[in-house]
Length: 223
Image 1 (cartoon, helix red, strand yellow):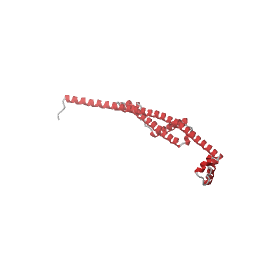
Image 2: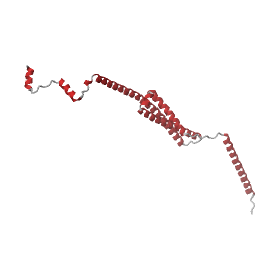
Image 3: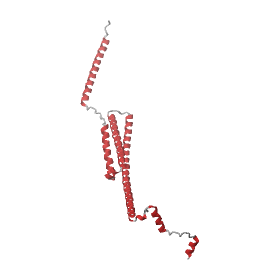
Image 4: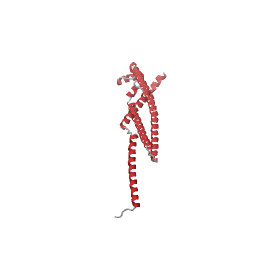
């Protein structure tokens, strides 16, 4: 077996030294990474409790719609008319859905902002973020518009209820007046049987004399 030349031996020694240096550097870097993990705060991932968010949206929707309805209508009116009760339910569902969508949009925007802060600078991330922000603003605008529509609806219901009650009171008053007049003058409104009708007609129209001709009646009138 041939012995390596001095140049070859020197090259192998340098290679071994480089290998040792690399291994030491790798161990040093690993140690530094471990130390850094211990020093830096761990990243906490936030999760949305959708059930809690939905319950909170329902509660807030109940408070909003009830406050508007009670401001324009008396609680007795709301409990008396089924239509207002059903409208109240639909309004609460609409407001609750808008609030829930707004909260989920806020959560998605927050998650994207965290991704950007952690180094995800892909252009698509910013495009999705801008789209979500526009969607959230649309939801806010829809909620504000629905609040105005809901207020106007309850205002109109208040006026319609007032008119309806006025008409009912007028109808009841007219009916009672007619009933009192009928009780005071029963002969003006009813006739008992056909015999009574015939007698009334005879009193109003003189009876024709039997066998009287038109000429005779004309002479009698002239005389």
